[in-house]
Image 1 (cartoon, rainbow, N blue to C red):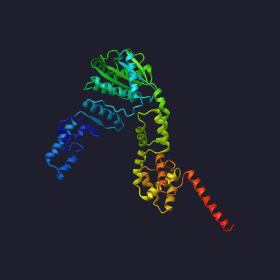
Image 2: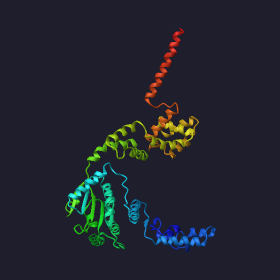
Image 3: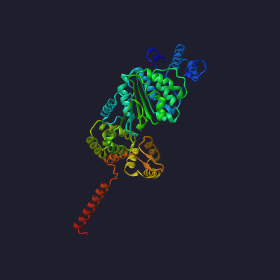
Image 4: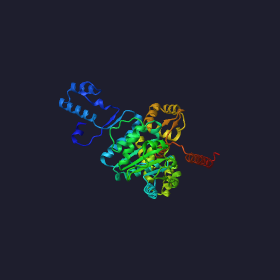
Length: 428
């Protein structure tokens, strides 16, 4: 912290499960970090001058405006606040739209055409069913349009805040983004008049995300007819009737035809991934921005062959096993899926392997697991990798029906040859 202060750059402290006051007077026995500094002094590793410098740096940080995180349940929302604070300081847009649907640029253009047809409406509703991409579109619009406004604010999860009686906190966040400090109200009615005055006087872009009741709009947008010239408010909602009666508003409905084109294919990709984030990330890289036909061709290939990127990453865990553990991994992939864990361990012990130790190694490396019935389960991609390795290493593990049929044919062929030789010798 001391070195950071000397740079002269802006510092936004994040107090993670720490109260800012805990950083003050750390050397005077009054706060929780006092013992640590006392230990430093006793050991004499650092000079008194350096320790004093550190104490001053911590006290300096405690006096700065930042973010305090005390409850783990709020960490996701606090992270968004931190991103907003840093982005405002840097003058950059805050959101990474990681879940961009195919054709998002077309959707944005469609939205802008709808807004223009609404005669420069100042309040625009993005309406659609859950999961249709309303928030994704709102984020993208916010990213593109916020540089054109003096103030901007993206108010997430309005419906959720209302269910927790925390709309006044959303009011405070909105007002802070609009440049209002020292907010002392603790209820919705206390925030309304301040919002009315501010919304009338500043050129702002505001997004109210996931609104499901008129009272939420009334709390965060108490002046529908008195927005400053050029301001724009975007509201995402599942129902259009929330905005239908507002003067100067227009509705944009999320069209589903583009998503329907890919809906079944996406479901099949999710099935192919079977819950493995690594696979999903690899598949996304294969098909992002491609045509529907390309998606289908890749999907057909994926069901037949595991992508090399996935195979390579999974091989890292396999290669870290010793020879005995590799054998256990291939046993599970070929034979033991759906069998009782105790049965497999007993079988390995009977082969003079360290069954329990090997099993625990496989579990620790996330290569195998058990369900609630103590039955062995393995991800499909790990299963496919294990079976491929078993075949490649000539491990004499046979698990596929075609392999069994081939072996039966070979046995029969050998039997016929033996009988033929016996016939020639006159023994039959």
